[in-house]
Picture 1 (cartoon, rainbow, N blue to C red):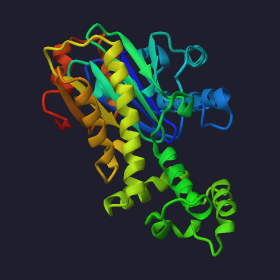
Picture 2 (cartoon, helix red, strand yellow):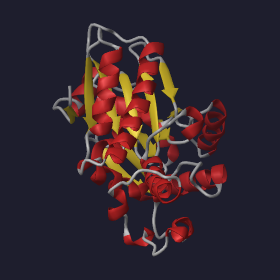
Picture 3 (spheres, rainbow, N blue to C red):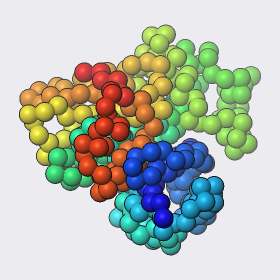
Length: 333
């Protein structure tokens, strides 16, 4: 029977699942809903249900059975602790997978964006997280647990900072911000005393998504709004602190450039460069003796899961030929 590998990139907003044959040919790519147990209303049980539906759909659509999948890599947001790893590994095993890797989705960007499979991945999307893989394949994840681990970043965080800025102006003697003038119609109120009631009602009714409000902060920063710029600078500093911690704990070959791979919608689609510029500045000033390449990932992170799964099946030279024969990322430095 024909053999396949599977890669999955599961996030808090969407999931992508890729099926490849062991020669490196794409067979299928499926887009799905969220598979982060922390955002699913049913927690782990809902995650198991979603993964079951997704895997069964994939198998049926391609007329294969699960025994034909010889290696899988699951990069899932919400795999942040040993206990989460244990529970989600058990779920994947119960689906019928035996030879698989489970990790936080932050690791996938490294495999997708770095030709040698090493570096530091900075995910800044719905949430944020930093992960590293050094030249000896040692792995480390920093952050991913929100404010408990000081994760200043992600679309939800930026949206909450926008709401906070308006609330501060209304009630806590906060400074004026042009974000007050460009908030969506759904958030506008005739009286400031109705503001938070309106916000909470719109969120509960799903008329607005907090994460979508991040666009307003970027637009305000482009207009020179100091408060918006400070919000983005704070995120850049926080992410840089995690990257610097990763560089301290792991051992990289200093004779070659260390790749810092940036992924996630905020890093890729953010219309103002303050986060990335601050991130670069703080890393370069901390490690003046190291060489870095800052890479904005322009291929799907799920490809990182595919490449990772292939590492045990085909040679590095074949992987390079398949995925890195032509540059597929934008190198900033």
